[in-house]
Amino acid sequence: MNQRATPRMAMIWFLAIVWVLIAGTPFVFMMMTGFKAQFELLTNPVWALPQQPTFENFLTVVSGKFFIFLFNSVLVVAVSVMLIVIISAMASYVFARIRFRFSNVLFALIVAGLVIPIHVTLIPVYLLTISIGLYDQIWALVGPYVAFNIPISIFILTEFMRQIPGELEDAARIDGCGPMRVFFQIFLPLSRPGLAAIAIFSAVALWNEFVFAFVLTSSTNNRTLPLAIWEYQGEYSANIPLIMSVLTLSALPLIVAYLFGQEGFVKGMMAGALKG
Image 1 (cartoon, rainbow, N blue to C red):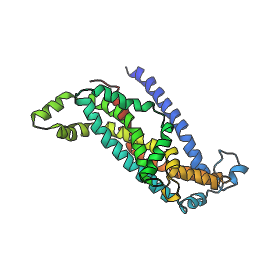
Image 2: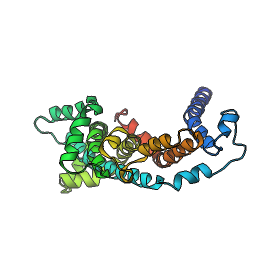
Image 3: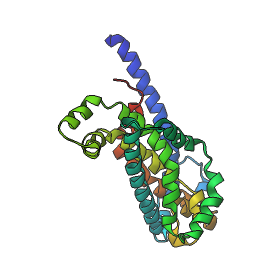
Image 4: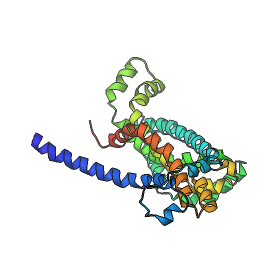
């Protein structure tokens, strides 16, 4: 058995290393290029190490309005992810454990939201945002962000909660727990891997979202990081190392968040695949 396991583990490690190289190479290239001078990229091979590493590009970025963009992104993503997790957890508990009339139909309608193209809703969302007075405010992004991530979140969490043993729920009800206490004391703690999965999944999608942020905001002080990258690219189109430094700084928060939450993300994504 050990002889069979050794080649298998070797293959797994080989594939993991190959995947790390494929996924990590672009980030390494961005970071390495960010330490180069403006014209060094044109006079030396692209993959060459910086001859005279400099922090000038990064200092130029952070001395501008980068932290305003960063704060807006962190605030919008944090509020949106929190609402997505809370709403999805409550709705998933209802669909997974409480039987009521038309529950399957309602669940199917929510999941059907996955097939709606986001760009089709741009004009209605834009007009609605203007009518309620939220245009050019970062809070205008929260509604669309939450609405378009709810279907996939409910789909994942509902399947996750269905795998929780019913004996735990029965024991809690015998002890006098009502539906709310069962949810908060039993299902919510046991659903942490699933909650981590949808939180990271939603955060990645929202951190890189561009279209709604571009349509629903216009002033610099209310824009997020994807728009910052777009504006820096327009202003410093000839300075490729500076653009790479912006991309590096924009990607770092998400990479750090994933490193801390990757275990919960993997467990949550695998939860629905295991029975019993």
